[in-house]
Image (cartoon, rainbow, N blue to C red):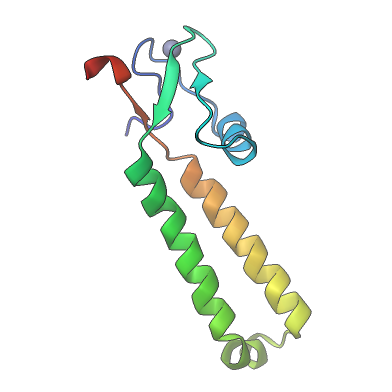
Length: 106
Ligand SMILES: [Zn+2]
């Protein structure tokens, strides 16, 4: 898979660096390849699909708190802490699978 690879020079963004940048920067802001300075464009459709999965899981777990809490022997606070942690972890893991689009092709 061509994840996090610059379409021009083939530079591969390290996963951790990339996730940090992606979480902190708004995705309207263009970021450049650190090697060749090509502005990197993220596939928006893919990004939306990526955000959808953890969000759905988060909402599902959120609405099922009364059913799941006794099974895991957790109180409400810990249940939500774990739910948020799971959301952030999953989101970050999926962000690291972003693909850069080749803007010069169009
Ligand atoms: Zn590059």
